[in-house]
Image (cartoon, rainbow, N blue to C red; front, side, top):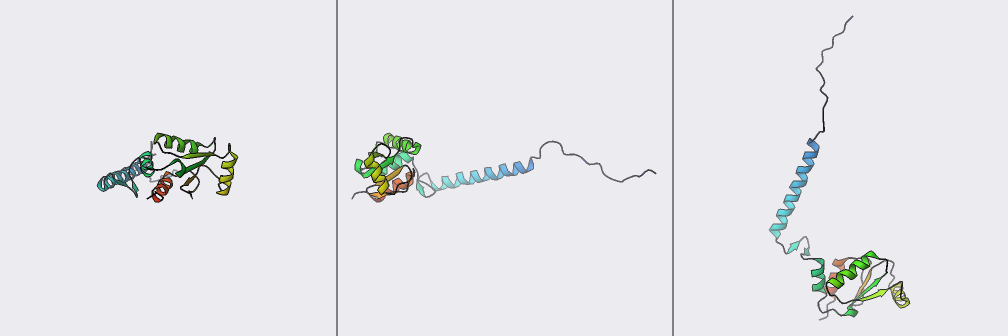
Length: 148
């Protein structure tokens, strides 16, 4: 007995289904375009909630009139973020005092009194900042504590 089945031939898809990828690309491109448009409409003076300009420019502006004793950087020789901060300060001609915690017992004692556990640790005009390299916090502290 011969059986006959009524069916349509199945076509196997060949190649890659580009439709989902194309949708993702369109959404990302649209988001990028909207962001560019909104940034242009707001003007170059602001991006988000921060004043535009390079970190070096903003840091240099905040540190105007600062003395070496105003900024203390507690560091360690192996700390990459400490090296980056020192390079930024040097490039911007910002005066600061470096305290090598591993090479100077007096610095280690001060670091311990500040309850330091990580590097870099900044003290700006007597105010201890959170550990780590956070230029925005450093700039805010310099602006907040400017001598009158």
